[in-house]
Image 1: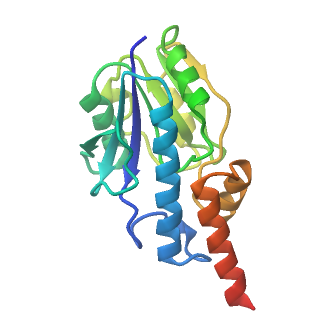
Image 2 (image 1 turned 180 degrees about the horizontal axis):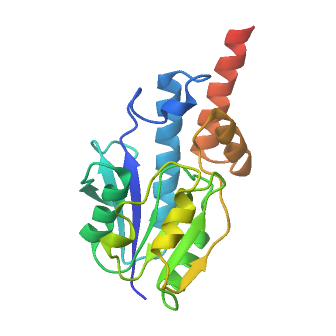
Length: 210
């Protein structure tokens, strides 16, 4: 089945992205970590087979944007509206992820796309109770609008919206919200830009504590 790989992302500007990483990291360090995570994620997306590779972006694209990735602007107030509109703007079957699971692999994304051939939706639960991936064969905005985001019950509420559909569930991943998350995810993907950025931030924090 032909499908779009879609990333929902923010321009990594200090003070506006990954604010829960501060403290212990500075806002500048948090932005560098976010930029590294976004770059890793987009490289992974480009390496996965899909008809289109798209980032729905809040802000402006930077040097972290690889060739082959289309950019569309995010629309809407809350995150639920932005997700719903991103699905609507690309049209047709789509698999969406965020910018905060840099440990994701092309194989995981390809598997999600394949599952849309047999299922109506694909759901990847996150360790914090949210979700790291959502795939929809027929993106109906009502499946997302009104779902409370960034809460421990976000995943459960999203699954309620998928009731009546054939849903394939993927493995659980940890997304990066806190410094503790960042260290754990960096250990899972040690060769990434993200891991290097986290190691640099950790070194700075520990050096400052001495």
